[in-house]
Image (cartoon, rainbow, N blue to C red; front, side, top):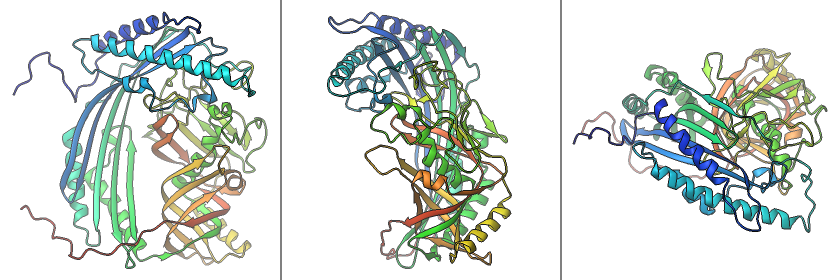
Length: 560
């Protein structure tokens, strides 16, 4: 059935500049109207902003040449920030880390209509959302005031929000329309090739495309429009050892455009390498624990820095009494004995020709992104900040407030860059690893080539530790021989691990991924060299032993 002229297109079409110009005044009028909200005996709003996200997605999943899912979607969400009181003192507390309750009434009004033929639905959405956010703000303000009766607030003298001047910034370039046919064919063809591998029990190829336009409008007369896109390809290869343990290899490619996705030919080459590693792991020796020298390749090293130090340099955590605040009061002091420099620069859109999916120009509080030098040659210089002041004077946000949907934006990493002034080649790092093995009288060391995720704990009531999931590693013996092993992940406490860095590489690699924290899952980029750690601990992986299939795998390639 043909689509009538002027009808709503649910997917495939991205926002035009003319459409954006129609949405902006609707948001602006609703923000100004929100400042008129009043309730006798309570403070009035001093600030309101709306962040509308227009999101186009396409999710595709294939296995053994068959497509299991090919799902386009289009949604709009609106984050509303209403603040009552004043810039000096409003309802926010604990750095905003706890402002993410999914049970709040306002959460159910975050979804906005995608219809651009009429904006009456959007006006009603903004009206209901701002009313609820205002009442929730008053409730938080009252709770904050009552808490002062019994407990001391160490952040009482700090401005809870800093004012910004008016600004208009509209990106004219839009992300390209999602090519659903290309993505579907890539998933089908790659999964067909995977399905023909003999020792593979299961193989999946998933590819998701995500294109977003963000429209930010505030009562400070700031109007900001930005576009972004992320393409995520994940291929999972799985088999089973003779004793029933599942082993897995995952190829992950997160990039900023369709052009950066690997071609089928390149993808086959990458998958073949993963398959060869999988077969190695299937027959590999299993170790249960290890403590000694470890060489982390650039991607695992980046994961270590992200988990062990990155989250602890998020300024919002300095404002929460429930956080461990590892580096509080340490600015100007040596926190790393090895002279590494760590900075976070959201404005870095590409590195060595590769797009950084964590990059942006303005954060989700409307502040301009800046290159934040966090650690310079081992000395702590600053933190990732939002518009909430960390000091009594002269606070200026470096534009690292980010959120996913309804959560309050808090300070998050974007494009984290680790640099070593005296980095050496990987060959030299392996040589030094062997020297450490001999010096410590260890039977072997370990090289971690690949990881597939990690996590950390930063709260004060729990252990200050981090974790990295190893997907491929080898033991290295004093004679230089390497042996593939399985069964362990690396763990540790941040200060101990960082103080045991012995050397760093001279080649940096980009790792595009996603980070989950209090304000949701967001795209991030880490750029790091390899590092040699004199002492790191590894612990056993949890494994479930299962029986093999009773029947052999069906023959592949049949049409019917």
